[in-house]
Amino acid sequence: MSSPRIKFSLSLVAVIALMAIVLGVVAGRASGGSTASSGGGDGGAAAGKKIDVIIKASDSSFWQSMLAGAKKAGGDYGVDVGLFGPTSETDVNQQVQLVENSISRGADAIVIAPNSSDALNNVIERARKGGTKVIIADTAVTTDHEGFIGTDNGKAAEQAGRRLCELVKAGGNESGNVLIASSVAGVQVLKDREAGFREGIKACPDLKVGNVRYNNNDLNTAASQVNDALTADSSLVGIFAANNVSGNGAARAIKDNDAADRIPVVAFDSDPQENAALADGSIDTLVVQNPYFFGYQGVVEAAMAAAGSVPPLALDPGAALADAKNMGSPEVKQLLNPPTAKAS
Image 1: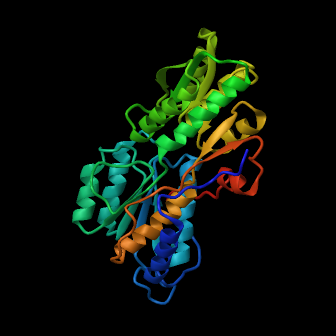
Image 2 (image 1 turned 90 degrees about the vertical axis):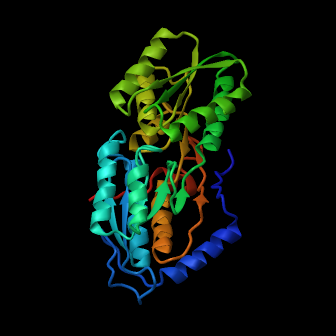
Image 3 (image 1 turned 180 degrees about the vertical axis):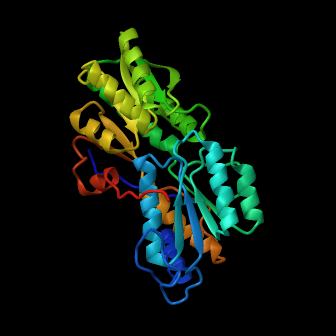
């Protein structure tokens, strides 16, 4: 397999120009730590600005990687970064409260990976009306904001569909049923992944994709649902897991049923469990994003907005396909094992 390509929605020239602007806006650096001190640097326009980063779930290594990127950017550019997140991706109310807290603290900007495309609209609007800039990461919202950073999940999932088609064919099957294991119904990111996967799997026209099984981001439920499908459907020939919890649940069920040699699994994201499953063959391919970039670039763009500059409206770091053959390569290994940090 060729080396993974990380695709940006901006041209390389535009990215270089953007970073030149950033270096001018956030001139001055501070040493690392849980937050970046406003005392560092030489008085650049963004130095000392308060930027709160709010992730989807504090118990997930994927989102902890976004926090690590944010923390590093705070240290690099002399901005004061706070790291926050609810315990669960299903806790929209706590995310709303965290945004309210940021407004009360007088944050100059907020970087948030929303747990809903619309449930946070009102609080985002209140923040912006009060002068707080808002950068959105991962999941688009249906209200105005200063910028968005996230993977084109439809395109990334098309890769997953085509890869699963290849794996099913390699196993000697041309037809059969495919299961989509997902977490929370109605989340736009997951809807995009489901749609993209269905488009990609059309490369195998005789494969039938059934209804999506939602596990509410619970590992035991995810494993149980996949186990039931393996037991009940003799025509099952492949599984697509739309997030890391779904991937870990699928891997557990594959191991419990000794099905790694006959049922290929393609899953989204990475965490230590998914990486181990990729190594032992209970997951065949991971669609790997770059949450560290979400956090780092999110803080950079928030600093730009807080200092009066205009960040790009949308930026896509792309996604790579990781498998047993390339997971040890430097570029893929870095994506599979990014630094992490804890929420406050």
